[in-house]
Length: 219
Image 1 (cartoon, rainbow, N blue to C red):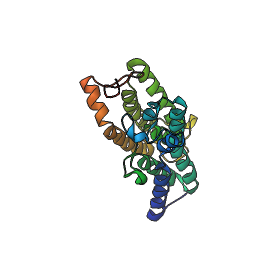
Image 2: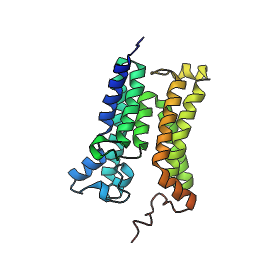
Image 3: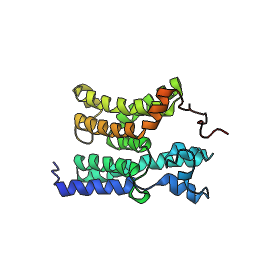
């Protein structure tokens, strides 16, 4: 069993943070000659805002890379134990939403959270993805789908802690379900905080639906 010291866990957090803070949305759009993504739409560096450039390929690449940087952090740090894997994954999430290179102003963390779940426990990743798809299909709000899915995935992990039979069928690679559930619930809280503007728009009925332009973008 691994019993990591505080400095080792801090190193895992720092490693994950630095990996997560790579601003792929900004780098890809600049490389494509589209300038600074922060000057477009919402000013966010995530895939949703990259899509506003009109390039679905760049948006898809941003989504994939923003997710995989958290997955990579988890899998690399897992060599040093389950605690290191979890801490590194959380570090990657924090790096994405608070990147040191961009004045701590990053994305909203949904894709990186998805990658964190993929690295930690693929059934939780699947629960998130299916919830997002169901909510997006039913209500056509990307933000609402992400908010609901970010809560359902941790709830699934916490419920899993009381289902040893299911755990036997789908074994946990890193630590306990309860530990992962509580940790990812804290991450979900950060996602909700980063979506405060979207929540306000949803409540006011002014949030744009999937495929629609927001009022700020409309001519």
